[in-house]
Image 1 (cartoon, rainbow, N blue to C red):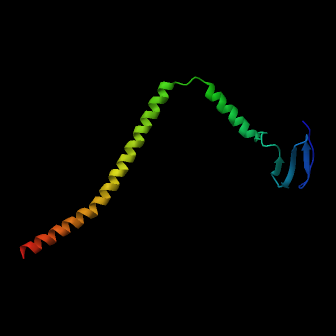
Image 2 (tube, rainbow, N blue to C red):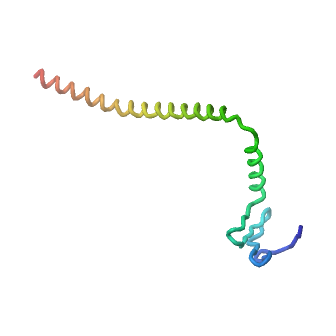
Image 3 (cartoon, helix red, strand yellow):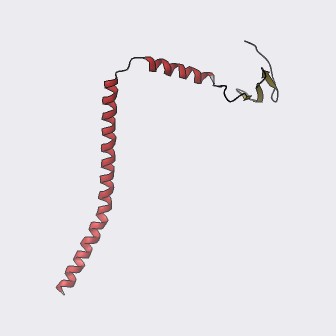
Amino acid sequence: MLVLQRKAGESIVIGDDIEIAIVSVGATSVKIAIQAPKELVILRNELVETVDVNKSAAAKDVNVEYLKNFIAANRKKGQETQYKKSLDKKRKQQKPIEKQQSCFAEENQTENQE
């Protein structure tokens, strides 16, 4: 590993088409800018490690039938919740309408009696 010391505003050139510039230096971090061809993939190390962990987890045997049942059960729960919410909303909307209808009916009865 090559270790170089650079100050803010200075840069390092790798090959013909990659430049790494030091943008700023803080107490606990260094901000860098990387100019490279678009086809070159540049990732932070922690992302590479996460991708590796995910790949190894995906490579393990998975009980597909269990996953199907789990997804179906959760889908049903979600649908029930949505159905209950829509019913509650309809009930709330119906109450004012019922009150208006009963008031209107009472007025009609009063008029008809006179």
